[in-house]
Length: 352
Image 1 (cartoon, rainbow, N blue to C red):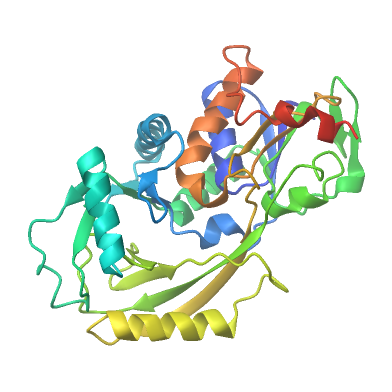
Image 2: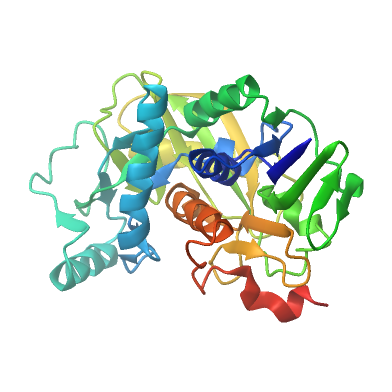
């Protein structure tokens, strides 16, 4: 079997990369064994234009957010589904200092930050002492539905091998690669944390961290916003269900849910929510983040038939559409990859 591109992984990156290849009429095969604890499946799918305690803009947000919105809307139109939902973020200030920080940033730029006119609006649902602000626009992407629908499409078009990728079976030449019965001009690694063990990309400055989340049921809560007070409370498609998370653990023993996160998060919810809730599940995954918080996109400097689309960290919902499209445009000779994301910036490391 001969194809243009072999894709390893069908998480957020692999799904969007194969979508743009499909739109360009490029032939491809995706290899994915559907791991349940991948970071793509644990993530809430939030697109948040603001980051950090200083309320700064997320990197490239003014470019990547409108492109992401258009991409998910196009995918929705293709499958007659809604994959992206607008939801502003109500940010409850945990301290007077955070209130002051928000107010200061609001005077500097109010593109995404907004005062909330009715400070008592959420008193019936939450305990909060220092008021709240609003971040908008923001979005929730329904990745479980999107990736499941795209997987069905891949199966129906015979573009999926639902199996584990075995690195030892890959034969790499400068002009092409061979994997068992598949010959491809390019192979692109969209395999998340597995790229840390990949001999071609293991020298990249990955900074893996563990994130955990709870799925809870609370029948009395409003679903009109995403809510934040230290942690995020995100309405899910299922009625009365909410995603609660996530955290960043830079030191961890495994990728399994921890009792510590469970206890801390339940205690936080009990102090914050005014209604009872039930914990339905507890999830954990390792994110393929990077030291400089910029993704890895492009092709190996010595082996140009091997590419990577990885390292999106917590911003995969917004970054993956933009850079998946850019990588496909680069493949077809229509554009270059942004210098801050291009893996060629690590040519010296990758050449060792």
